[in-house]
Amino acid sequence: MSNVVSVLAISITTVALAEIGDKTQLLSLLLASRYRKPIPIIAAIFFATIVNHALAAYLGVVVADLLTPETLRWVLIISFIAMAGWVLIPDKLDDDEAISNRGPFVASFIAFFIAEIGDKTQIATSILGAQNADALHWVILGTTIGMLLANVPVVLIGKLSANKLPLTLIHRITAVIFLGLAVGTFLGV
Image (cartoon, rainbow, N blue to C red):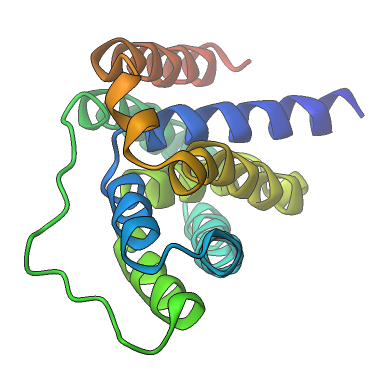
């Protein structure tokens, strides 16, 4: 049970902090200002994240199965260190990213799912999935909760929340967490 709580806590914290200032958070702000219907946008974020992160976590397990334990350990260590560096680079939403006119749920689902492909939170989910294959559902649940914790407030209170957060400090804390995960993996914790 303590492993489940640990996996859930690490998954929630990692994604919630990594998501702050991320392009999908900016996308949440854009969707909220365009549609002004938070419930369908939040539902779309939830479902897009579940699908995207489930695929990412399962891919992490598949890749982990193809590697020897020692190789996987080093891939995880290097991945966590790379994520620590990547999280320090703030994301911007591309100006030419189009949003569908199909309504708030469909537009938000499609835009959010596509924006998450190759995103640092998706990569983190793959890494966590590879590291915790025995608790994969908890990884997916935790990363989804983390995504919602970071994006729902942006949808609900819009630009105010995004402009008031100390993004540099949050990015640094997240980088330290990823470095801690790298050290923990190195030490076999």
